[in-house]
View 1 (cartoon, rainbow, N blue to C red):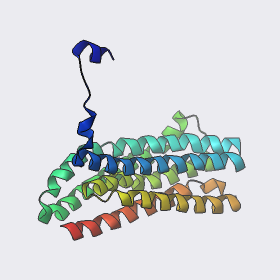
View 2: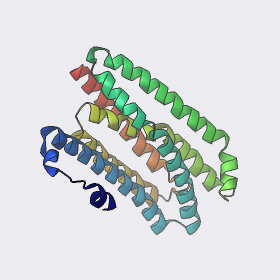
View 3: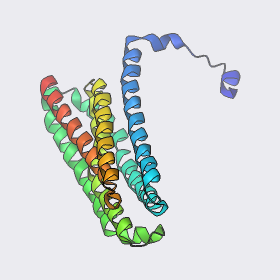
Length: 224
């Protein structure tokens, strides 16, 4: 408000109604709904575990999940740098598939490097987080490390959905991912497999990453 009053800044909302801006808003909307769905089923896991599991298991899950989310976010932040690069490369469509494979491979190496660091230092991290080296805490941490191999690729391929202008399919994949997560969740709770509870995260992330990758490569071959 201070800037508006001091510098007499005015907003021209008519510019938002251009075809280009409407297209951008629609694409962003689909991405937003997808991210919202991911946050929703992530919260659902903790809620369900809280209903049926012990306070200790809920605490371990919550803490180890935060480490997983932190590393996922750290790796996925590189997508903001890669996105403009992917848009630029897409202009040369006949070479795009080769370029994309190279970027994907480098991204995969970065993910593996982060996973390796986390695996080697897992006991030190557990000690730092005041989690005893029990079977539950070690199982949860190891399972989240496996999930970390796949989770950053969900966000990576989402950027490709935007580049290829197929953002509507993001919502479809994410919603099916929620169904997959819920199904695994029901099985784990029904059989009281609380010691491997993060398995629902692994299976969901594998589904989302591999499905998005399949759609992306199919669309690249179609458009390029």
